Image 1 (cartoon, rainbow, N blue to C red):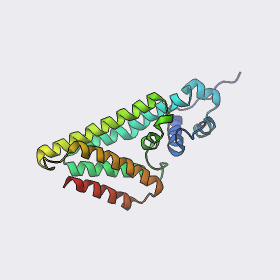
Image 2: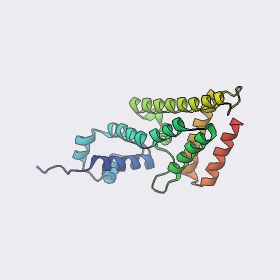
Image 3: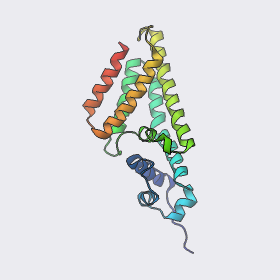
Image 4: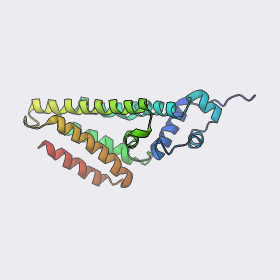
Length: 193
């Protein structure tokens, strides 16, 4: 009996992340994962269990790499418009980066929530809720400081900003034109005036 091939777990998880990001959860097959990760079937099952378990781990890795950074941008913002501008710029940077498959893994996955396991769906919903709360908190600070008029519905604006973020991700998969994406951000930020 041969000894299983050893591998760097973080490295193969990153490769799996890019495969899921590029192809989507449903379209990614076990042979796709084995090829991209550079491991054999027995190593895959021994280390990751199955596709769903691997995907949950990949989603956690993506959140660590991307989600935490975006939340930090919103939490550390000194002004509302600058914080949102920085958030959306980071969003665009990730969505159009040449080394990324385009768009956002979470956005791409969210379009298929009905076919993904319940734990992944719950993870995505919690992520959206965290983002909405962070956006709301930033907008609330803006109302308190006078940057945003007191009559603005900041809950609705927070939800609009999430929609813009998703829209940027989808648009970036179709056209990775940074200027077009920035125009979308400018229009969204004009709602704060």
